[in-house]
Amino acid sequence: MRSRLAEILLQAGLINSMQLHSALARQRERGGRLLTHVVEMRLAREDQVVQAIATALKLPTAELDKIDADPKALAKIDPDFARTHLAFPYALLDSERSLSLAMADPTDPAVTDELLHRTGLRLKVAVAGERQIRSAIDLCYLGATDPRTDFRIFTPMEIATAEAPHPSALPIGSPADLARIEALRGQQERSARILRAVLELCLDKQLFKADDLHARLKKA
Image (cartoon, rainbow, N blue to C red):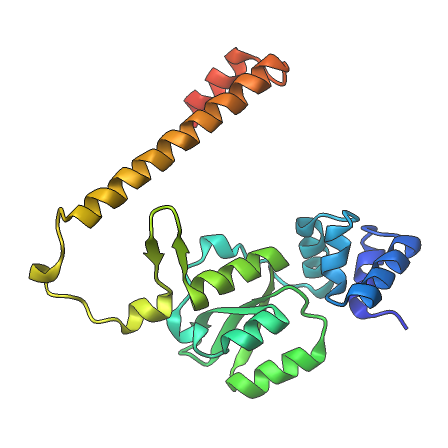
């Protein structure tokens, strides 16, 4: 018996029965999610899958890179559950009686039931891509550090619970600050060189004309 997700992908015309069979065979061999294999096999783009699921289930989509997650919402679901089931909570609504969250696959009723049980809140589900959800979980639950600059990106939960240091304790113009600024400048210079090389290659391959590039840069 086909899963609800498989039916959605077929009805949306993103894959055919033979492609579904191949994706399911790969899933049985390697484990993981059907959605993951469909995208990795390039049978459909992730944004196409997200839109197909949202349309079939009449749900909105979420652009998590444009959302500032509420630390109180994050605290409603533990990181392990969020990563295992690709469910990312980002807002509390209705006087904190409802939880907005993004899911890669909202078709699994067992996961939805478990979320209701764990949070005790009404769920307002939106659909987002697996990679976007994983990235949001890494950033907001685990934090991240840029190894080239040693800059620490604090999670919203850490920011909400942190004690602000006294202004006199802030190292203004310290050697460490200067070293980080210098590292950031070097990173920007490397990025500029890479961009210049890419643009020159595109012009050489006549992918676009110099006049078109200038016009687009003016609009930007």
